[in-house]
Structure formats: C-alpha cells, structure tokens
Image (tube, rainbow, N blue to C red; front, side, top):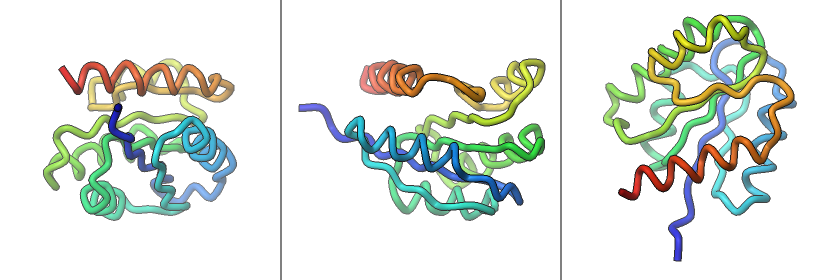
Length: 134
C-alpha cells in the first residue's frame, strides 16, 4: 500500500486572494492526499516551520501579487535551512512564463500557472513520488 503523501499548501507574503489555493487544496484532498492549508499572509519562516513540524513531502505555494521571484526562493531557502532537504516545493498562480526558468533554478520543482488542470498537478506529484521512493 502506498504511503499517504502529506502536502502543505500556503500563501506567502501579503497576497490575500486564496481562491486558487483553496481550490487546489480541496482537489488534492479529494484525490486522496493529506493536505494542510495554512491560509493567507504566511512568512517564509512560518511556512518552513509548519512544513518541518508537519513532516510534509510537498509544499505548494500560491501567489498572485507578483512577488514570486522574491518569496518563492526565500521559502525554498528557509525550508532547506530548517532541514527540509527532501521536501518537493512547487508553485502556482499568476506567474509570467519568463519567470519560470529562474524560479526552477532557485529550487521550485514545478510552476502551475492559472488554468492548469488539477490532473496535471496530480501527475506531477505522482511522478515525484516515484522519484522519491527510488
């Protein structure tokens, strides 16, 4: 039997729009994952602390405010510094195509832009699960 994956969904920074984050959190829960949703306006330190305390396998970040180039890498850094070296971090929201490569260079495993089908996110998680277990 497969171990149930634990996924943290969080909104870093001052972005107060959480409809997409709540949608993906619910969709992942409905797909059988254990999902923890931290809510809006989380600091990178708070996200890292929760990720470590909850022993999550994945952290999904959602941002619409345009601060993704600063906040996403900062979340990666704080999670890694806290010992979360095996946590897969992905992001989503309103993110220009031109920013995706730099975000991936800075530790974001995947970016899902507005309108990405939930199944695409699930396929990514399952692919990562296979890589983690090998």
